[in-house]
Length: 390
Length: 143
Image (cartoon, rainbow over all chains, first blue to last red; front, side, top):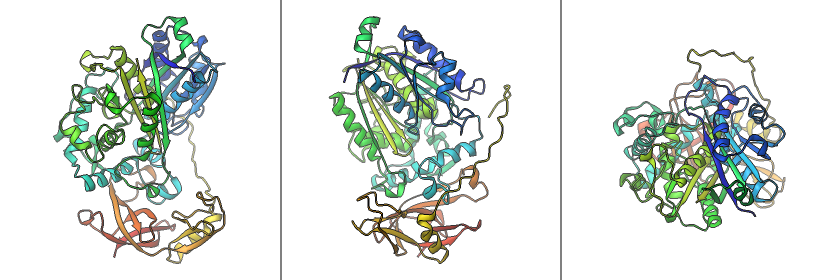
């Protein structure tokens, strides 16, 4: 396998974006990614587009083709990837393997999602069906908040995690979202705000949940030879990718206090990159719901199982803590345009590893120049962990 | 939703899928008779709920139908307030995952208990039921 580097990243403004269609939104992230990489669309041999809601949340059923045409990428190898909320990471790994295998010198992953073209009950319906429709949605009307609420209840029961602990995750992530120009929500909130927000799926409340967001992010990857040829001064290397999956039905899971696919994906990524959890300078974890961030601390090995709540209580995942987590606002405040999230994580980590985080107050202190992105699809149905090194 | 910016409404598309149940029809028939069944692989002995026609463990398709006991214990639960489009006509509902005596777990609605009275570890009964829409289902109720 050949070494692969991130040579360019681009990001669209996340939020409700009724001003743009899927192709126009993707373009907003593709253009800055090309400018950052110093290449043009003609240099790209392979494009993996990540988008989960094609034909469901928005009108286009072949978004890869539509976006490729709009961005002048027609003719390149092309595929649409789907791994639920880990779709962006699936696209990234697909582009990565094209280069690592020696097939391409330059490939790119475009993550894009439009979620606000349909109403909220329809969005809830479409995401609620993302598990095993026949056995867990058809008769029981599960929703995504509900899948994670089942985990929140189990975690609270077993480890004494409280609703206040969950609220602390939201407060932390809003704090950093307020400093991120790309974030959907750019305002701070309090524990009280979270606790009094309306219940969505008990014990999860509105401010425990990530919003419904439109957005796009693009990552351009290149081989080591191409990096040298282009004279890239700060390549960020893809040091490891780990992935795993979980059962479609929640009823076939061993327990509800963690995600086994996260544990396995993380182990594989650490092995691949030859790093330990304590060497990570900054991590972006999949906080689609507050409980998901606490489980991620444990599943990724930042603390022992059951100690996730302590980590947030002690402020260890703040920017000056033991392991800064979601200093871009996380899915909670930055927003979670399903197919874009994995690419958005790599955008942020690339900026962090280059020492270029916007705003400056969000720049973590780099000790080992190692960063980790944890992207879960569904409720642990898919998981991708990507480790970057500079 | 659009907030005043120009847009075009797409053409409407109504999607209703015909989901084949020929291989699990016995399950749905038994529900109508008031019983909940699982399948068991005759070759490796693995018990499956939800029922399956093919064993993912040993790849045999020689399965037998086994009646499940109704004894379950709640492992976790939630109460869904904000409901999907096709569940708008229902009042908020409680979903639980219960472990059956046989070891398999079931995700289903839990009815007949006040939310504040539900506890993890609580014993409940799994019953077969016909929904208000006339469709077969199953749910947990107090013992």
